[in-house]
Image: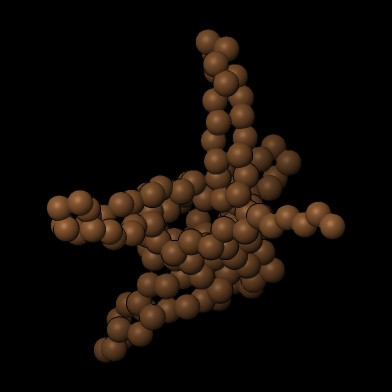
Length: 131
């Protein structure tokens, strides 16, 4: 039996403000970059940080909510599928772009204006209502 799984789970910070556009058919699409950082010790026993940048795409209602509530620096959890597209550039060279198509976004920033710094965990999915 052949099975497959295409799921990405990421926690990181937005590298730029989300950019929202609307397709000719009227569907919202929002894109943003997400930085994830891991630490490791190098051969000299010194701690090093390694940052990976991920291209995130949200569609429809999730795109609208992401564009409204997220901003550069926001800490979020993103769950989605990995999708790679390809095209030929003007010189005929094959180019590739890999994106995470978001199914769920959870905002992890602390609420502002509260005495205690409690994490804010609001789940945003395609079916979410505006909060």
